[in-house]
Image 1 (cartoon, helix red, strand yellow):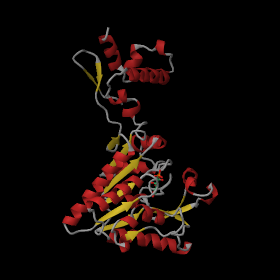
Image 2: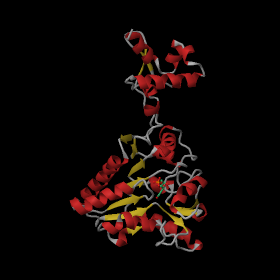
Image 3: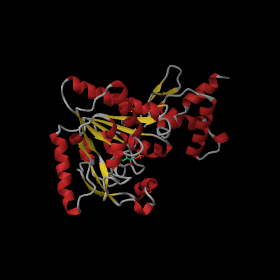
Image 4: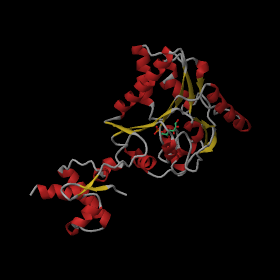
Length: 326
Ligand code: F6R
């Protein structure tokens, strides 16, 4: 797996190795990260305005994009960013769900963004959670057509669920899936229960744009904040492409930008075991972490670890470092 080369010293040296299959940018905190995303969206909106064209945004709800929307609202109010050329399509909505309900994504979007900017109401599209079941299939087909008619999504904002879902495409979702009615995963319903009176009140279903619909977007921002997202982010970014982690399908998309805060990045190899990525500035803390890691990895007590163990597990640099310090 690791790429090795003989350095002039004769020791084996580990080259820099990238475990991430998507470009990742890690920010100190989610406020900074959200501002960065909002500024990129604002820049794209303004560029289109200069060309006299509209821009199509794919929007997410949930806690992740809130600070992005807050920054966009600030840019509108304080820096004159207009949304008159914006056409928006939201990813999903619970089903059934009245628009005015506290938990509806329709309400969320108006509360955090639409009520505070000058977007034209006719340009807003949010899946309708009030339709009778028999009309849903046609409605979903129509939603896809509307996206295509608008010219396709230019920028898609995404959060990620702990199940690895994007939109509400839960494990098992297929790569080319279109907008459709889905069942929510148990973990997703559990995570959503904080917004409802009780877990039993969380709807079992939702209407969601599919993985295929998301995939058609020209640029995708996948955002995640907090340690509770770290494990699934590692799987989505470093793991195999699998339907068990629908976000991993993004590895096939040509223009995805992953934006993380430090906590959400914690499980990435370059953060968790940077020696494997070949980027080590050996502090005392890091040495301790590496030695404990090696001991767990080999199942040997620390004092029984041999030079070979260090070499075979990407820690040859550490032996060189220690040898040089004596
Ligand atoms: C919401 C959506 C979901 C959320 C995900 C993360 O429109 O599509 O995929 O992005 O469940 O939710 P939060 O941001 O609340 O952690």
